[in-house]
Image (tube, rainbow, N blue to C red; front, side):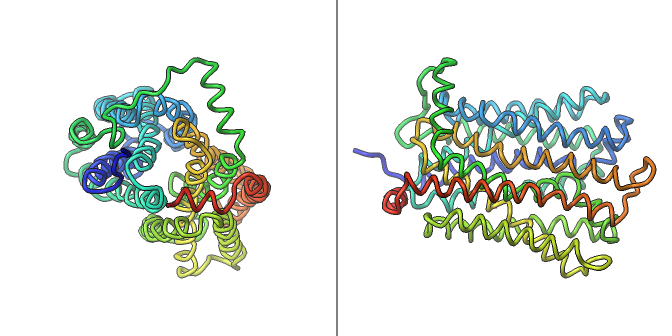
Amino acid sequence: MAPRLGGRRAYAVWVVALATYVLAIFHRSSLAVAGLAAADRFGITAAQLATFTMLQLVVYAGMQVPVGLLVDRWGPRAVMLTGITLMTVAQVGFALTESYVGALGARTLVGMGDAMTWISVLRLVSRWFPARQVPVLTQLSGTLGQSGAIAAAIPMGLALRELGWTGAYLVSASAGVVTALGLLLFVSDGPDVRRHRGERMSLTSVRASLSASWAHPGTRLGFWMHFVTCFSAHAMSLLWGYPFFVQGEGRSEATAGVLLSLMVVGFMWSGPVIGVLVSRFAWHRSTMVLGITATLAATWTVVLAWPGPAPLWLLVVLTQVVGVGGPASVIGFDLARTSNPAARLASATGVVNQAGFTAALVLVIAIGLVLDWRTPGSGTDYTPEAFRWAMSTQYVLWALGAVQVVRYRRRTRRVVTREELRWVRD
């Protein structure tokens, strides 16, 4: 008899897993409000401070495939426990170290632990809930997870002022202990098994699993969907959004902070909407991605082409459109789900998940290089004209991603029928 999917126990597992993901987002974002304090504590320059962000993207993207393989082999519960342990140790180290090298090592461990959470959450959702609920719960997971970024922006800022650097980061590390206990007590890898153990993996079997996942055009379509939709949001929220609004658009620091917060709002309201649409219109997932990509490019075009600083209402629109890119990228995970068997679902998800972060890393570097190229001298007093050139590098990535989405949509529709997708949802 097949185990019952959904119900109170399934939601209890999801809530605990979601809390772990929220904490991972919190740890990932906690440096955003501590940048100036970090520069003072470690005696570093702005370029060295930016290295934290670059390192985080590199580690996160590079860990996706290995983490997917680990989840397929050892189950999501064990991988999440490892991840939360790494992040807790890292935050303790970050609280206590006074050296730049030590801080880089701590942020590397944060990136590794962070990389272990999202794929595990997706695997738990796919194991515990009926297929028709998976797209909606996937989007809700991503949406609610962003509350960790809000917590990092407000409570973490208060903690830094009231408790100081060491106290604030030690308190944030203690939350990991509570989350780990929740995982141990309430989470199982599936309704029919406490601990999932996949087949032992040799180098040959790993290569075969990844090759099989990548060979399916649906996995490649999901990869390019993730690639083309979220790099703008990542580049803006992790590094370049604040200087773009202040130096590129002439807004005050307070206004720039509000605009960045509004990006999170855009993420949170659009996630459930996209989840419902994906659940009801699975055949048209690629069309949704292409439409959102076109909207992203069009909105940026209006902002960059505006004579002088863009009006505030237009910048607010930009934050909402860019925010939608995050949930849109999650559609790529649904392609991985419907294109691969359960035994290699996590590794296929890892393949897809590295796409957008790789694109974001390329964009972050490209923007920096163009800003330096278009700015006289060697300072960081960037001009609006320099930002127009720099932000225009996004069009290259949108064009590449859109072409690949169209290309692999055709290939996927040759091997997947509407009836097959209807069966997956029911």
